[in-house]
Structures are given as C-alpha cells and as structure tokens.
Image 1 (cartoon, rainbow, N blue to C red):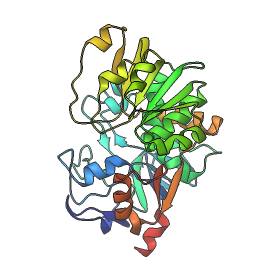
Image 2 (cartoon, helix red, strand yellow):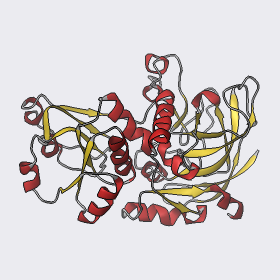
Image 3 (spheres, rainbow, N blue to C red):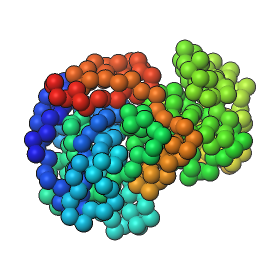
Amino acid sequence: MRTPAYAAPSADEPLAPFTVERREPRAHEVLIDILYCGVCHSDIHQVRDEWGGSIFPMVPGHEIVGRVSRAGEGATKFAVGDLVGVGCFVDSCRNCEPCRAGEEQYCREGMTGTYNSRERGSGEPTYGGYSTRIVVDENYVVRIPDGIAPERAAPLLCAGITTYSPLRHFGVKAGDEVAVVGLGGLGHMAVKLARAMGARVTVLSTSESKRQDAMALGATGFLSTRERSMFREHAGTFDFIIDTVSAQHDYNAYLNLLRIDGTMVLLGIPDPTPLSAFPLVSGRRRLAGSMIGGIRETQEMLDFCAEHGVAADVEMIDIADINTAYERMLKGDVRYRFVIDTASLADA
C-alpha cells in the first residue's frame, strides 16, 4: 500500500515528502489509519544521527493515535473503527524474562523501534508515524480510552509513559514531596501525573519564565536552579526527584535535595556527568534510570489519565511545518508538545 509520509533522506537534510510501502496486515496484525503523531525530541536525535546507527531514509514518529481500518486473520483485540495508539516499539523477542514480565522495553534482544529499527525476521526498516497509516501486531497496540482528546493522547505514548513508569515503579503516593527537573514535554507530564497521584510537586528549572506555567500545570512550588543558594536552602526536602533534562548538569547538587532514602530517577541522557559517592551514602539515597514502559503499563497509564483528566498540552502543526518545529524545539519554543495532524499529508 503506497502511503504518504515525511522522511529524512540523510542526517544533514531536512525532512521532505516520501512514500512508504505498507504491507497488508498479516495474522494478528492491524492496519491503523493515523490521525495524529506527536513530535518527540528523540526524533531530532535520530534524524540527525546524534545517537549513531541511524537508518536512512527515516520516517520518524512514535506517538501515534489512529483508528483501526483493517484486521489480519486471527486479530481479535481490536475492531475496525477502534481508536488506538502505538508507542515507541512495535515488537520484541517475547521470550526473555523482561518480555514475559510485560517489560518489553527492556527486551534482552532489544525492542523493535516503531521507526529507525529493523523488523524481526525480514530485516526491513521500520517507518514511523509521520505517515498516514501503519501496520502493527495487535499485541503492541493500546486502546485510547474515552475522555482523552485523540490529539492530546498522542504524546502520552512516549512522554506520558516515560514519566508515569518511574512514578509508579518507585511508589510515589499521596503526600510525597516530588521535584520535577525541567519543564518541557516530559516535565509537564511529570507534573500532571505526580499531582494526579496526590503528591506535592515542585518544579526545578533554569527558566524563571516557566514559573507561571508550572503553577498552572498543578505544581505547588517553583525553584530556580540558577540560584545556587537554593540547593543549600532546600537540602533534604524531597522524597523523589524526576530528572527530565538531557543537557549536562550536576547530579550531586540535586541528590542533596533528597531526604534520607529518597530516590532520583534520570530520564534524560546527557553527556557523562561526574558523580560523587558522598551524596548517596550520606543519605542512603538512590540514583536510578527509567525508560518508557511496557504495553501493559502503557495501557494502565492511559486508563489512569482518562480517570484523572490528564492529557498533554499540545500545539497542532501541519506536516509541512515539521522542520520549523524541530528548530523551535531546540530553542524550547513549544508548550509543550508538537502534534502533527496527519490529514495535512494529503497536501504534502
């Protein structure tokens, strides 16, 4: 099936119109007509080959919401017309311990990315959501609940689950003092989700201009990390810190903000940062990392968001504006996630 898309021809060329050949759905697969696709910062990293190993031409996009238009033989989980989502991966080995535990994102053989990856078996490259349709195994598709606008649900498939998973795994609960480092696509979801879990949330940011936004999102406090005295004055304050920043910064200073037995979780991937043992041993603190979530937990997150009225704050764009959107993202000029209306591909 010839499918309109936008692709990066190489690491140093802008995205441009492209055609993807999508196959008919096989057994246990569904064909999804894509309605919306969120724009993640990792799209930029991979399009520009900043992580290495990029496969070109590349069709990015792993925050996908659409409707099932066809089901392959034996596919029973979704019916034609169902509103569904596809996140960061579309397959895994299914046999290793993490896969069997519903933690497919940690597949020992490596998950198969929704784009910039290769299909198991055929070795064909995967193409993502900057396109009008996609074929995915039904076991790697989630249902979008009623009550969440589809365009605002799209970023939940990456930004939402990336922040929900560590909050849930490390047991954030009502009354906890939670700090969110950085108020971007991930950070704004961390604030909303932690608040929905009953925590008190403080945003830590270098940008004083984000104070008003932080409070509007549900934060109960805002601290400027440009004020070095802040780290001394608020030492031992927080039960949990969720760090969304990918720029290099001093982990040691943030660890000292934790109470005894506090946990700081890294979601960003900055350049190597020196780490001292003292902030850890002096407070029996933990420094951990986390990466998206499995299919089961992603569905749990979506249901939680529907129940608590949580959705992403988005700015809608046409596909023709994607290169401009990338430049704006690099400047932090988005509140808080770009989402492509894939109907605009008809005019691309």
